[in-house]
Image 1 (cartoon, helix red, strand yellow):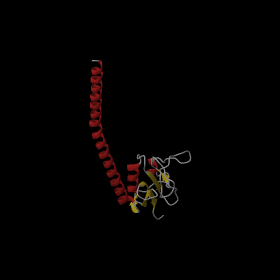
Image 2: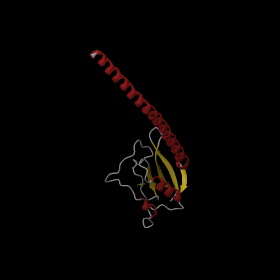
Image 3: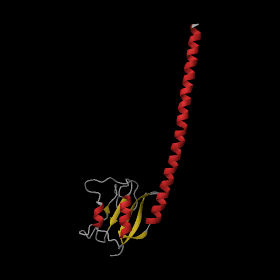
Image 4: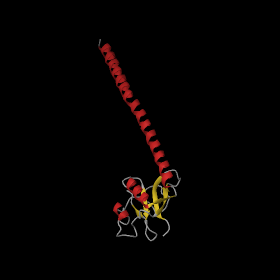
Length: 163
């Protein structure tokens, strides 16, 4: 009788283990499918964003108001480098949450440090600083900052055209 009880207990234990594994599989399989779907959606959004940025800012001449609008749109984006050279006598100012390296090729956005600080968005409209103020009607050359392979947009650089 003792052996029969042990065999029954082992059988019940195996049955409970199989039930637990089956329940976990029922929960995990839909979760894996959901993760795959969400990953696909994120990739589609990323591709759509890349295409939109390319269409709007890839070596395009735009107005100062469009520059201001782009800066306001992407100012809070944690991965967008935003550089603006408001006048021919100005230096590039960094407006994004991350900064660039001064070129149009960047593999990873850089963090701000004591010698490189993020410019305040109000500087775009500060008419007391005519060097760094973006004129609404002036024309600016928009260029995309990309990674070395050229397939990912890392940011946008705006440079005043002409004088």
